[in-house]
Amino acid sequence: MPIHHPNIIRSPLKAIALAGMLALSLCPATTALADGIANAGPAGQPGVIDIVTHTPSWVWPLILFGLFIGWTRTRDRVVTPARLFVMPALIGGLALHNLASSGASAGGLLGFACGAVAGALAGTAVARRRPARLLDDGRLAVRGDWVPLALVTAIIVMRYARGVVIGLHPALAQDATFMLVDTTLSGFIAAMMVARTIGILPAGFLGRQRQYG
Image (cartoon, rainbow, N blue to C red; front, side, top):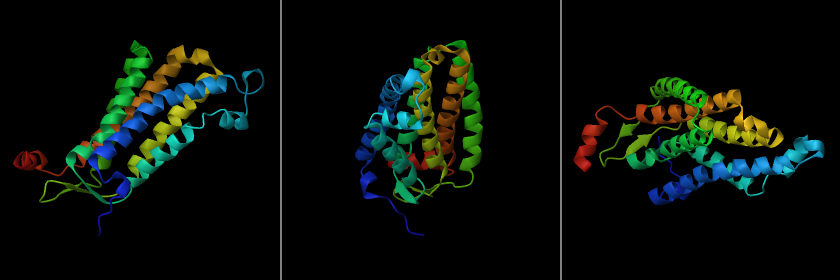
């Protein structure tokens, strides 16, 4: 089966820069969306059209780019080990930023920890279905998988929904139950992505990497 790797992400530095831009932009996008929704519609109760029209225009290309990044993971490709960990590292960093922004309360930490444990178990189980193959030059042949696209989509939906909900009900940003659910889901998705990436590494990977180090 031929290995495909779209030109837009063929360069490792370009892949890191684009993925980093996506992750770093999700936080201000959520804040901007919340501010926009807060001023939308009559009496602070906007409809679907109001929500869409008050979404900052620059958020839509960001969403499309995130979905494209996830879609590229559905295709077989050859990557360096470093590139394989770019997206999991950035998503993990985004989850930690989300935890810190919630105030790192006891409830938030508990939710994040529970979500992370469940996500790690799920990611490990999923990884067993599609292990990567180590090539002679030290790169990895990775089989396409729809799980990364599903996780990226879940992150985008969560951040968008969070912006809408906080825009409609600002007090929820400090609500313990809301923060518990938010940090639990965030921890689950991040841990699942990281565990899945580690889990697809072929047996003897670390020993082989020392030969190329």
